[in-house]
Image (cartoon, rainbow over the protein chains, first blue to last red):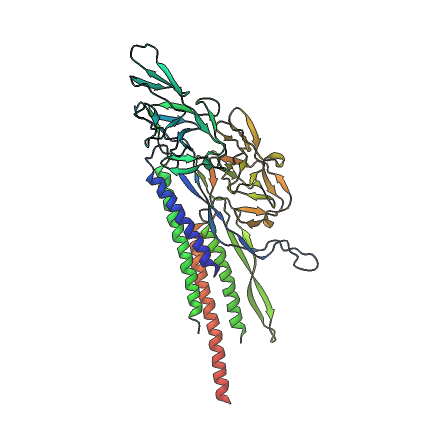
Length: 261
Length: 239
């Protein structure tokens, strides 16, 4: 019976769905987390009687054939790159991106990673680093004697130092955009890496055309919508139950046959 | 005497077929743009030697339920749903295919593609290219795609001459259906997806129906067996 294996593909798909939803809910309060969504499509079809074939030698054509689909498969777990809401934190080194773009981070292995989580800190050397101590690219050095630091929408960093009226420009933050940002590879720790699917990064200055703005002293919240996740969870669970019901029915029908005298 | 068994058997075979189709519908209850399949059964009449008519069950063809699925708002700018009977076209290696699955993506070159990476065709059969510095994408009701200031192209929605002849392919694609013409008055809705049109309640009741009908057919087969056995026994006694 094909129904057994077809329903099994359905159950596996819904299991993936629940796993993705649970990861979304678990990361509801992760800075700049982008929710993922499991995407499904139908599997192959078996054609038992082909439409368009001639049914008689007089040229009559079968208008519709018999096609039996073989179930469902998960094609992608797609990140939904929607803007999360911005939350004011008041921290001097918290930066949120409003619009497109990713901060560039130097990984210890020399590669560049990309992130939207702008909760930076100052390293002992005065440079801006992530929570794990990875350097922000291009490097921004904050003077030791700085009283206050401000970052404007275009990513220019100004430090207010004693005995100077005008704040000093200490650097320019640059961000990267991608043709297909959902193709980025998630590395964990809010970091992403470039892939062939994402395309090469285009580096630019915030607030330029096609680049997002920087909001100083704000953080981007996750874009997880709890109501949506819970309704998705309910529908995934029901779909799982329905598929198990199909297995039960197929099993009953088989046992009817087995019990034949 | 054997007829009763074979009639029951033809019904059981048809019911298994129906269960397979139903199982596929239920497996795809959360598949975007999926349309349920149904099997149509017919009776096959045969005259026996004593001029009685016996009717068997045959599965004639499967057909696609063309009712639209429910629409769900996702807020994702690259999700589109088609309101009305129309199709998106994608260019596969085997030619143009139709789909109602509006989960669009951009590939690294900035071309609009579907979830499998096939180019979505715009007006004139050309793919739609989105430049790198594009702002927030907006897709209008007529398929025009732009960022508020510039227009990058228009996604074409088409209609097939013979929708009944469309055959399902993997990945929510359809093939066949004759000549394609631009669809008039069909709207695209951005940020929305068309869910599967499988009716869960109906599917569950069909499941119960199939199971019950299968058992009834089984009784018929067993009855035929019983009759044959009795006949043999009775005839044996007469001799």
